[in-house]
Length: 81
Image 1: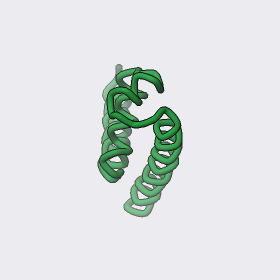
Image 2 (image 1 turned 180 degrees about the vertical axis):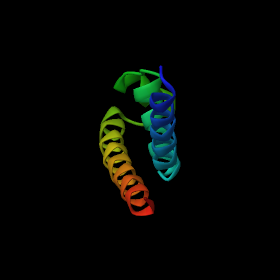
Image 3 (image 1 turned 60 degrees about the horizontal axis):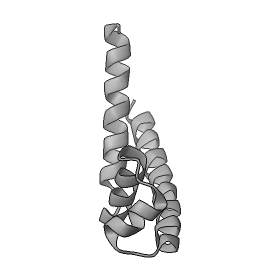
């Protein structure tokens, strides 16, 4: 990977990291367990001790919050340039 691509990738990782850090703890937990660890909805429900419907609605809200946080970070980056 060339240096410019590495720099752009590092910037993207930083952007995503900042967006995730701004989410509530439960949202971060749900996204990590589902998207990074690959747990099924049933496994997630068992892991955090809530009904599967709660997992599904919580993930939906967490994804919406992440999109909003990411958009905010992108706008902040654009205004800084």
